[in-house]
Image 1 (cartoon, one colour):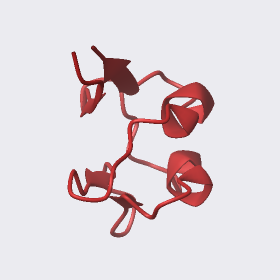
Image 2 (image 1 turned 45 degrees about the horizontal axis):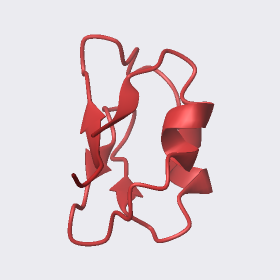
Image 3 (image 1 turned 45 degrees about the vertical axis):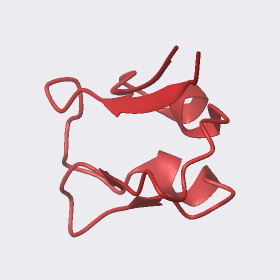
Length: 63
């Protein structure tokens, strides 16, 4: 089964620069202003780095 990154916007405070955007090794996350990050599934390799650094666990890897 393939892993997939998910975003739970209810857990995302959306009032800060998202630290997960900076750690993505393939640039699959982007953020406009202080909105929740957007996921480019065409780029995402589901490595989990963003999920590990997300302070509110809004980003998770599902299998």
